[in-house]
Image (tube, rainbow over all chains, first blue to last red; front, side, top):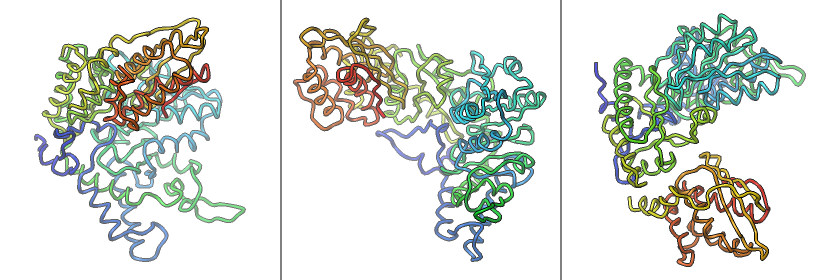
Length: 409
Length: 148
């Protein structure tokens, strides 16, 4: 079945606009996707009809808000193949999910001399919390390299695993290269050495349907806004027996059973990790995004996205002096590139004037930029609602930039 | 599109491609580093004074977009022979122009070419980076300037 892209686009009000007199080609989906109308409406409906705080009221609105919030948890759990909604902790986003693991499980289980294995393609969100933990407890950060095509070097990864490896933290899909990592295989290798595995799923949710049970990992971190949901809400999935044994994260309301000045008895998971009033509207908006995604034929989405990736790689690859960074076989529709003689920021500005929104910079992956030997790249990242016309606008914009710089395009 | 052509006018593109006074200056009387943490642009500026207290030589190296490199290149041309006070006066005039507080003054000569950046607020920091770095070098003899 082919994807009806124009019907998909009609669900996204923000896509139907002109920028600088040109039709918007929104190709910055790896930074954040647009939201379908259904998500915006679900949030508005909640605030207009059911708005109340959760877990602490006997009145009707509080009951409705609580039910909707917990239903969102259950929906997300089912979406990613969790065994129970109790395995889902709502947080602000992927960054907080990873920090939560570092600050609780990490502080308890990682000690001096232990190793945390990362890869060269990690986002700062999956580097900095581990660097901070390692500095605090005297652990070591070990880094698995990538190959020239941007795929993880599995042999080198295997060689860096040891009995000292307590945790492997790796991205499911690279935000800067598009590389899709073989997380099942990586997890299996890590498990052989007795290591725990955390997957940064920020970039995966819009393109794949991650199945945490099939992957076999211990932690999976997500953000709603990278997959058609609202800002400010994300989740940590963790295996229930791990969550049950994890010390609390932040202290406050919602996460306790009883409190006195002398002693605090904490709540069960997942509420033990959700101190304070949560982002209720965010969770409800996310549930609406999952409902919207549930109607998608993911096979058709995959085929369309791969066709866009192929078209973009071909169109950009034909431009003299343009280098695509990341050409692994398994790739999400993300194309990072540099043009000889034109800095990524100038490309970004010129493309914007052509209505094409891309990201220019280090993509919060400075170690990766260093590995690639570039200060910054321009990145076009696609979602299921993008079109082949937008790929052409991108390539034409790049050529226009080169002409502006008196380069042969 | 006209704004774009004004931003990337020939003089800017040409100074980006062939930056003037590009390279190290050893020994230097003053050195400073400029960083734009948001985009990763960085430059290193070297400066030498003559006996009359005028800038005898100024050079830079680093990496950045066309705007930041061209701005640094045009600046080094403008700085030679300037006293500290003259530099400070020029800094104020250029800064006011780049941030839209003053209209381009023909007295600024070639530097007027940088005025195109005013139509692109997110890029103003690219144009001011070299100037902030020079200010550090002139006033403090060393240091790090950031655009944050």
